[in-house]
Image (cartoon, rainbow, N blue to C red):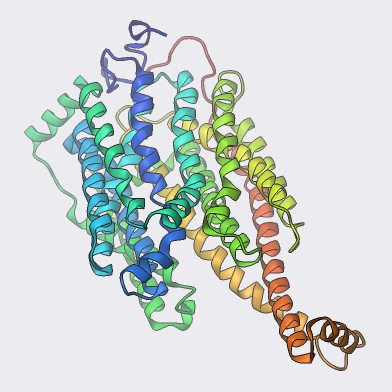
Length: 531
């Protein structure tokens, strides 16, 4: 498709184009924004397998090192809901490039960090830059392509969003094992510089945005400081509760109770405040659109399952099967390859099949893969784990692209910035809920199964003494036999806990199917429809 054929096919506002492609081919824009997307999403998972190395290198405990993850997620969550407003006020090109620049510079500073406190501070800056990237990128794509052509554009973008968390643990493990943890941050620098150069050359500020910003300047900027403060406090405290809840015994801790009260109060006040504003910093009225609300709920579920299982699988194979960090990452890498293969197919299918149908297929595929995982045991082979992840990842491809495409159907012109902020916030919150609740369930179900299994390891059980005698003869005494039995019991209890979670997530995916039928219909082909 030539540039001449594609120019003007995107969204218009009062007859003026909103596309940032200008006279360039929109597909070049889709490729450029996907580079920064991959870099940012990769950073949400790449540090997971390096925490022990970071703690050792900076003379900190492993528990303290988890703030490297938490600080990034907190600042990311705070920026997401207000990024649409900031992009409108500053201009999308300028805002987008500022986010890339901040992310790149802070990545360099993270790699040079001499202490844990300095690293956490730099991760906060990195999260602020990263939080503004995804909403800007999605609104750029939504405005640069006609509605019936967004499927393929979001498929290209989706490869970056879904593949990055899949390859992050593998790449992070390999870099940490072969070089040092500093390089998991340094690798962002050349990618960020390339993204900045391409964005400067190819992105063009559209006339409609210029007019809107000039109008806002004439009328005077009205900054919603109260809305910004409530969003920052509410989402920041919520993220701390989710990340620290399991370690602090949830509501048995005054620390967690206090942060929960502050978070709930701030978020309730935010809703009441923003609904009364003419220029809300968080555009909550968009959720009155039934289709957009359904898209956000399904995206929330997608984030829950994607991030929850991406955290769970590497942890399981290291904890139970004894895999190295690199091998644990390799377990989910085939899933990334499956996504790369499935995304273009989904983009083509969106030309002839309604998104809600593909979403149902995706939820069923994800559920079946999780049911397969719930049948594993402690002898499960690498290939079985990898194939299950492949089928699950292929199902996720059938979710992300249709949801991202249909979310913008029926929204007013000029609202794509705000819509992108909310849809990305839903995905990130889903991921936070997923990681937090999965870890909580894992700990509690592990304790439950251990207590049940211990009931059979007593001298009163008919099979107990023969087993002790058999192991004692093999291992050279009763003491090694009892130690081996204890180790096996703990391994079995943990495996049963993982199985319980896979089973629960499988049913959760099935229960989301009714929401798919609330998604709006999208144009499948024919003449472009302009807002």
